[in-house]
Length: 168
Image 1 (tube, rainbow, N blue to C red):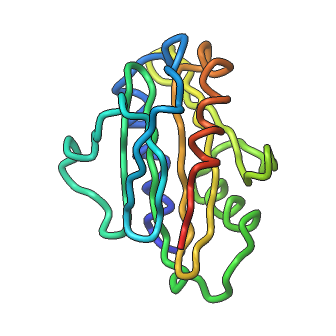
Image 2: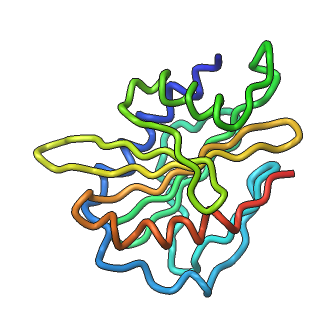
């Protein structure tokens, strides 16, 4: 298994901890622009800012990070050649959970393979809501993160964004 999946938790923590809360609300996702990173296309709301430019070092594989107000949306690609035997989406999610050492269970929500986990930092609880996707040559994990107290407001918008994702 690639070290990239181990980097996931660190990336999401950095993202979540640089911002605080989810704002009571992410504006309407209807105004979105598609972005393409390698073999993944996702509709990112126009008010989100590309935050990957603020990262000193990025993984060699596909990566994106967008933020708005007090939420962060990140994506990280794993090449299928990293696996001796190509896992299913559910197995891939379980590998990520195990490698990240988080307490989470895989759930299918609106047809998406997801898992949710929590991080505590500086007495603040953060919720990370992840969905995994499969392409011809890759897997992607895309995560929306925010303060736990605001998650119920953001989850629906995260799902809308996740449902826009296409992987070639």
